[in-house]
Image 1 (cartoon, helix red, strand yellow):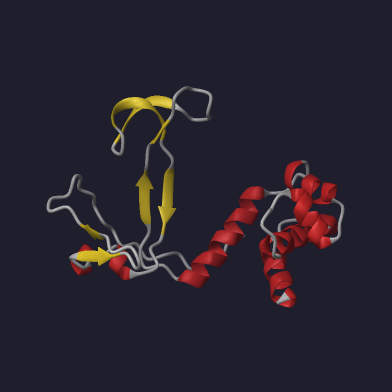
Image 2 (cartoon, helix red, strand yellow):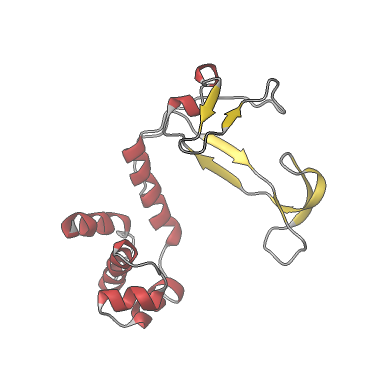
Length: 173
């Protein structure tokens, strides 16, 4: 297991050119994967047997190309899942004021009339084709152990266009 984790970390953290940062990244990943309820720096460092400031400095103060690491992680996930379709969605989250980043008074399809909200755009891929091919949805879905039946509405509340786009297979730089 440790060899696979080090291989994964070496690939994902390849943009980190300094050896100390690569080692800190590997430590951080190991800390996340070890048993333990709390995944904050101090408990993880205790489980790893290292000074918590090493992990803290890696995550908060060290300069490393976050976007490059995220891109490598995303490409690794795409290779593992091999998505057939991407779901791009903008979902509004209500906010009570303007203190949060990117909050504005705006219309949101999920919230209705203009309200203070954040509207992030996400891209996801469903694991099962039944999650995106509406013609193959079951008429009802039963939640195991609860006995509640959830049904699709007879008429959809909004219409969207579905475009199946084959994913790119090339790797990040």
